[in-house]
Image 1 (tube, rainbow, N blue to C red):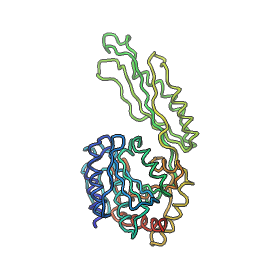
Image 2: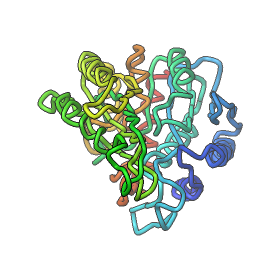
Image 3: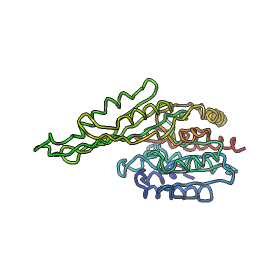
Image 4: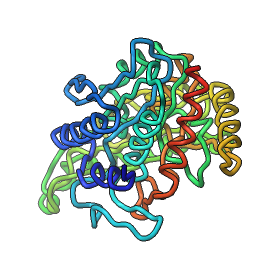
Length: 358
């Protein structure tokens, strides 16, 4: 078995979240790998228009190995698609989280008895898991623990995550000729700027709450007063109370701007925060397992990024996150994963599974 070669097979299939067809391709390849390593294929199904892959090692589910195979990288935006320099593997999604999926499969293949293991791979995690959330929560509720194979920065397991919310503000003004009669228009670009002070006022970084304007689109051509502008907002918070406070503030923006444009706000709370209490027992198990295997002592981290582990922890299932690839650069041009850590982390997961399934 060549772990790096298995990772390469997945990375070389570009699978941005927005391209459903490409995600079918990567799911099919992932199922081929499962069949090769585990001796039987998983079940591929379409969930609300998107492909998912589920493999069960027996009739008694106990531990869910949760993965996703979609990436943030549009086709052609990360080149070359694959490279290796010593221990460093590079490619779109290698760190987040295709190497993690391979680690989950290898770890399962090393068990003498796989009854109790469920592997689930989704394809919409990077865009909020709106299609797969119901499925992954229902499978998690069948189990006693969830391992999320998101990447591990500096090898640290993730035992706490902020909750996320996503909003879009649309401003509708009135178009007019920018040269002949701009005064007859209502400039959506100018009017959307009026909401910025209210958005920024919702920030409370001192308690971990961030409200961040991200993408902004306005107008269609140079010589026309723009009729429509759209602004996306990313929200992160440590508590449900903070998420609700920001949500109420965002909804209060609905109405009419000072210049007469219509302001419409869409969005809601997406992922609840991952409470560290939901990871404590599994992190302790990981520490003991690492010690037994002679691996370096494990550390933990609380991070601002969210994952599907937020969902599973929120419904009461013990969840450990960041047990996937070791490396850095998720969503960034320097994304990389450690080749040697693939087997090390797979061995760690195998030992943890042996203890939980005993």
